[in-house]
Image 1 (cartoon, rainbow, N blue to C red):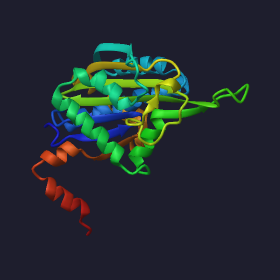
Image 2: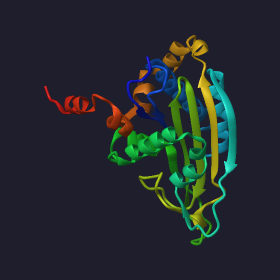
Image 3: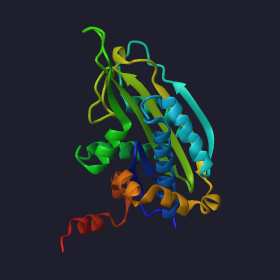
Image 4: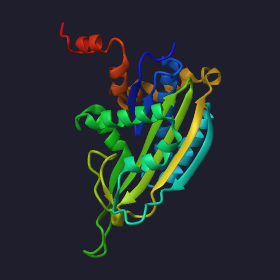
Length: 259
């Protein structure tokens, strides 16, 4: 049975948008669990996802392949900042890269779910988790007052789960001498403050459920209840779901009903 409505989750440093075309709740759980496992494994191996994002992502992607994600169309590009552009946003980078290869409905779903996350209170569990796992400010030793005292590293993932067991994944990573605020998708990063290239890495995958079935419980056991509870967080009912679901008003009533 497919999902009744779209759902959106923060899974460590990955915003995962699941459309109603996902094959079943079990498939979605498998996507969430295995994605978290491979993020945590990469963190463990390299100490941090912010030291060398490219190497971290390569291990993360390879690990997903080992837990029966059949990965295709994997590639990484340096985002070419257009001439005369003084600032860029993560959202504008996505619009010029990853979003261009998605169909319209899937793109709209992702845009709505990004907006939904950014509308959450900054103290909400999902916002706190996403901010903690997608960027960091590194303090550097300085030789003079003219040296930049710190640099920020952004390494975030955006995933669409759709069409049965299909998954589309994009990672954006770069360094800047600017501090990162609470709205990482819409913050304007000055081009002159960028430290190196902006990299965009993406791939397509299908979760091979017949094979994954044999390791499902092992992955859950490996993660443990605490990791799942603390690192897989439902953001809220998707905006698209609330607009289109036939029982939206009843669901909203029940959510606010005290008994």
